[in-house]
Length: 99
Image (cartoon, rainbow, N blue to C red; front, side, top):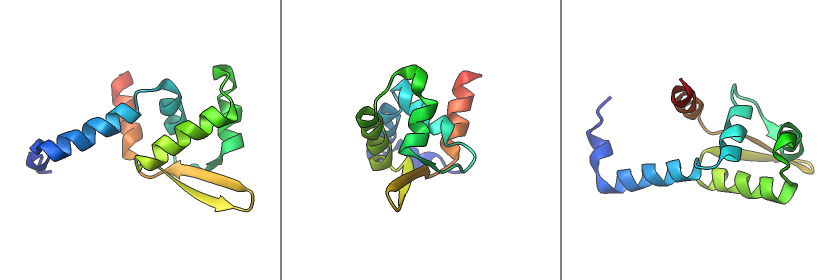
């Protein structure tokens, strides 16, 4: 892979903005929950984050931030909105940070 395209100022800013979005532990947990091509509704994600004592409006705020950064994508089905990762590569980066 040619990494020279990463050296432009515009790309450096784009990458930094994406990493800034990931700067919240709840957002990292959401990404890890959706690992493996999982699709989950807001209520399903919320049930997995009970120990964080997060409420639904706060979770929705995090989901919107991740979606606007093209980290998540969503699909509405009836009354529910289901979220999934736009790319599995991000989970690999997160895993590398733990090791």
